[in-house]
Image (cartoon, rainbow, N blue to C red; front, side, top):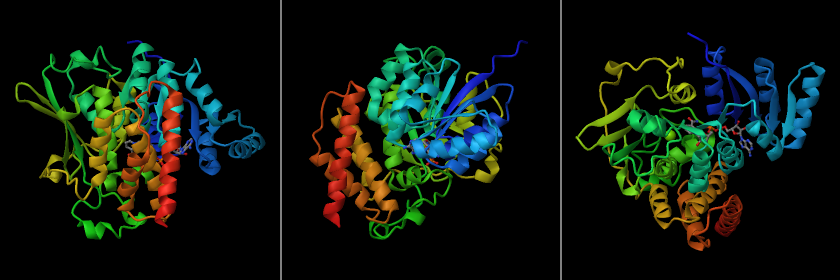
Length: 407
Ligand code: NAD
Ligand code: MG
């Protein structure tokens, strides 16, 4: 058998939780994958360690001063890695002709421009950065399809759904846009599972006093701080609902959220003959990352096999939209359409950062998102990147004003 070409990877958000899980999988398969470029926000020390281990051709730091600091340390050590910075640096390492695969693992709206550029450049795009798709939905999916990008969901739920879809769909639609094909393939519903987060059983009163440390302490998954807070408010599930809506082109009425505290079933698909297909596994992001890297093949990920006897029991509950209003706000935003999901996402990012800075309480996150959605001018035209970024900027200003008014 001939050995397949080594895939050249640009990893956006290399110092984060998804970034380090990706590097863990890649390290197990040096013959299949090579790191071409790594990017990070400002953490020079962490990037220096990664440069020494991976010797990438390029690294990109978000700001010029971190880039200059890293560059001077690397030149003293006589390392060949070239250090770039800012958006132009990100675009260069995404669009580079030598790059086959872009792992989109920057957190938040900051990931939109390079992730969209990866789709436009027709790369194999491993999508972890759900906020990019929540903001740019149709624009992003059209860019992926028109440029023959291979769009692979890394979010565990969406990756699970992809795995439960029939080959007849995924084979020809690796970019996951399955326009109007589900009915003919017998797909009736998709089920997004949610752990329920650390406060699943807490009363609304008790939620009032939640601290940032409690909120980032997820029972099943080890993740970055922003997505951990999103999981605690159920905003993460709402963002995933919007993500599934775009990825699988499903009517929102045919996507259900189910609370499943064990996080063993990662999501499910219901077929017209009564079958429900589920993907199970230990909660470890290396499984969906390895799947998305190697599809249609399978490779080792380092994840322990699931011991079904240890699991023993699988529970399912309805989500409580009263105690977790962020999920309700996501349903409402997607029904409203236009820029509503962009406004929702921006307000959430500002509110979560304020909560982590102890400027507002846990329950204020949903209050601020709702206030922002009510005050913002929701526009219909979100067909250009410029309009999307304008809506995002405007929403951030409104949320910041609402925070000031709360103090
Ligand atoms: P994280 O906070 O651990 O890492 C974020 C990465 O993005 C870091 O490398 C950081 O340096 C970089 N970054 C942050 N701000 C930046 C900026 N302004 N410009 C450039 N780079 C910036 O986050 P994470 O948990 O790895 O999540 C990354 C993305 O993956 C998020 O969109 C999240 O929703 C999604 N995701 C994460 C998980 C998980 O298990 N962690 C699961 C599913 C989806
Ligand atoms: Mg998820």
